[in-house]
Image (cartoon, rainbow, N blue to C red; front, top):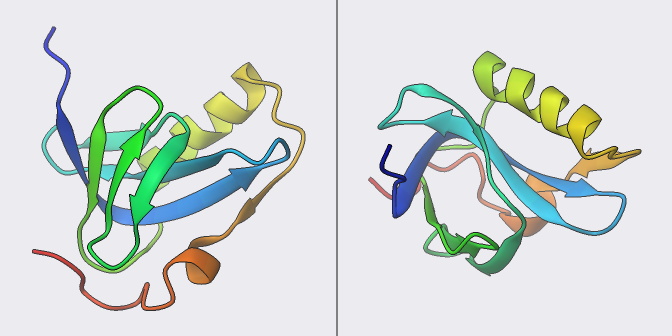
Length: 103
């Protein structure tokens, strides 16, 4: 199965874990499912484009939001990786998170 070089996320948010890692949580437009990224290593908040630890490029589409499938995956990741605490830092990192963003 081929992995995507670029993942476009809708209804996205940014989570910070107890160890300081940042992750995208959102709806993968191409695969039509919930997605959690590996740790973010570079992030252009103005363009809403990031590179994660896996080397994958993420593009945030539209305003931030909630996606039930993505939350299900996030809760699974929290248990799997023994994340003891996390917070939603979307508004802190992307002040215009309500804006439509890139097409």
